[in-house]
Length: 109
Image (cartoon, rainbow, N blue to C red):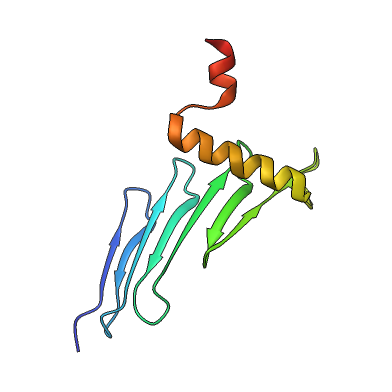
C-alpha cells in the first residue's frame, strides 16, 4: 500500500490527494476559492467543471457527463432555468470557448 499524499495551494485549498489505495483526486479553485475543477481517478474516474457568478453562486456545472445551469434572483435565491435559456447558454458557452471572448466583448469592438 502506498503512502497518502496531500498538497494544498497558497490559500489552504486541497489541490491534490493521493489515497493509500492509489486513487488520486485533483482540484482547482478560482480567485474566490470556489472549486472550478475536480478530477477523480479510480472506480469513479470522472471530471467536473464549475463556473460562478460575481456573487460566488454556482451558475454552471458539468458532472458525470451532464450539464447544469443555474440562475438567481435579486435575493440570491436559485431559480429554475428554462430549456430555451439552457440551450442559449450552452450555445454561448460553446461560442465563447471557440472565440475566447464573449458576445458582449464583440459588441464593443
